[in-house]
Image 1 (tube, rainbow, N blue to C red):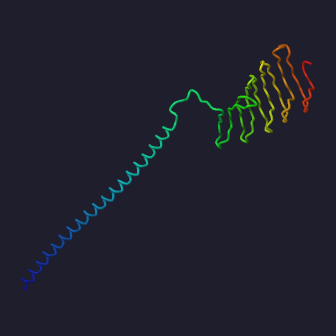
Image 2 (cartoon, rainbow, N blue to C red):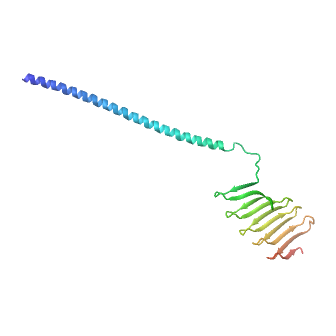
Image 3 (cartoon, rainbow, N blue to C red):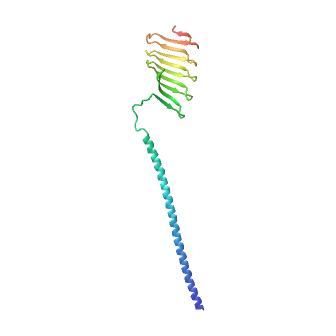
Amino acid sequence: MTDDLRGRLEALEAKLAAVDSLENQLKSRVSHAMLDATWTVRKQMLTFIVLGIVVIVGSAAFSVLSFLRSRPSHVQENVRARRFELLDKEGKARIVLEEDAKEGAGLVLVDREGRRRGRLRVSESGELKLLFGGTEGRDQLVLHLNDVGEPNINLCDRNGRPRIGMIVEQKNADKSYLLQSDNKGTLIWRAPP
């Protein structure tokens, strides 16, 4: 019996060794399969990341190219219009180049509240005026060069009435005047008399 028991034990040990070998082979195959699956998932993730980067870079490049194509490629030698406006950040006109039927062609400076505070005008007859207005909307400083080249300056009150004036007559080069008026427009002082 001892030999029989020993034979059985050896057979059992051989079977256990075979089971251990199968277990090791199975573990190895599972480990390789898991590594392959992990590598496949990683490759898919890398593919998605690379595709995302390509889409973002492509979109940015397309946007830049679209912007560059929309910009004028050259400076125009001549621009023609009836009116030009320079706008502030809020979209309000601050400087205007225009032709006014009453006052002629000119440049207008506008404050934030929309009041015309400064104007440079050239009339059809050739008169040139530089007018600065107060906050009430009336001219308070007027520099005027008439059509025959006679300059005059008027300092006005807040109602727009000239109060102090200086005039140089071109026809009579020796005649220049300083004038002062009251608030009703009546001349109260003149030099020379």
